[in-house]
Amino acid sequence: MIAGIGTDICRISRMKRAIKSEHFVRRIFSEEEIEYARSKGLPEQHFASAYAAKEALAKASRLGMAGLGFSTSWVRRTEDGPVIMVVESLQKKFDELGVIKRWLSLTHEGDYALAFVILES
Image (tube, rainbow, N blue to C red):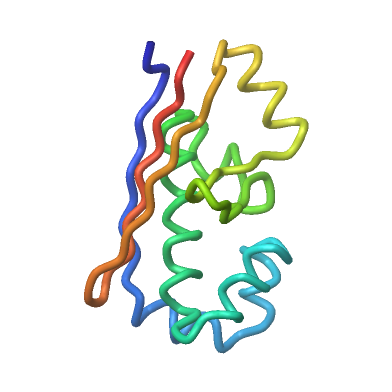
């Protein structure tokens, strides 16, 4: 059963400007996300999709970014596709809500990156 759905879109050109600030990068993204994005030819695309994933998770969980914060989740790139990871305290909240699986889809086209999150119970 679906417990929550969230989506978010992020303008890549906006992220390209934002990631010029190392303070912004370190405040929003995990070390894993930073290393991955910076290993790519267009890091702003990958930062933008990770940012959108965090926002989409906040919407799907109905906790909002104020309740979630940027440091409670991160995108892990695997051979099977991207996975949204969460810190232990957030996992406990999801356990209480009956969330058993998190689904994540990422895409980018032109100047936009989009994330779609489904929480399954």
